[in-house]
Length: 298
Image (cartoon, rainbow, N blue to C red):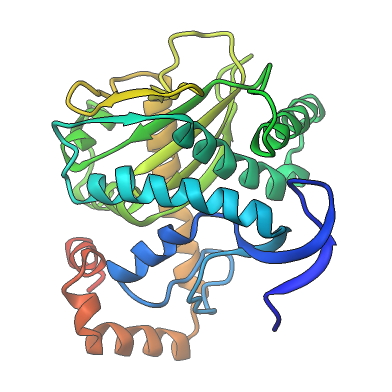
């Protein structure tokens, strides 16, 4: 299968040779492999083992290069150091690259999921947001309306502040760790009337874009400035509130989805999974192996 084809670039609206673009940044899948297995499965088709994240023909070479520059900056300056707990007491200065990176990820999520938005008014707003972001990503002005962008990093020390104050079973904590450390996710927060926000999750990070906001107290994390600024990881605290509850419910929902997916796995695929786990020394000694042992899945 060719990695290119002729078509209209979603970023520039020009006809060109399209690249097979990752929806989520490529470094996410590299990280998953380096800290787990070369294979993973989703809850929709659990009998199919995948070796890479979802890709579509979206961008020409220009778009791929522009996105890649910001992804490389984020991976090297924030993602990998944060995963290694090197930013616990650090400050990170950034310019436009962080704002651009966040929007580039959220734009791709919205571009590939907009047709699944059932609410007509919400969909209309999302389409406007998507076009504002496209113009910005293509070298245009800062989005005039949909410009509130947030990043929510979550490390081990913040787990206990993120989740409910009441007692939950140990296995639920294991699912929390799994969700934060390994899962990818995306959805539009619609739990509170007149408040809508698109989010995308990669290991240890959530990215949020406000679509509609009536409650200024909703905590989406660190607000990212399009002109740059400084992130003080030492002072950062997720706090409590509606968004905390929403994320916890995402964990519960994902846990239920995974249980249903496990019931769909054939005996043949189950044997393949077991053999891969038992004979993959890298996996056994990895972050994924530790999570599997903690959750009783290994």
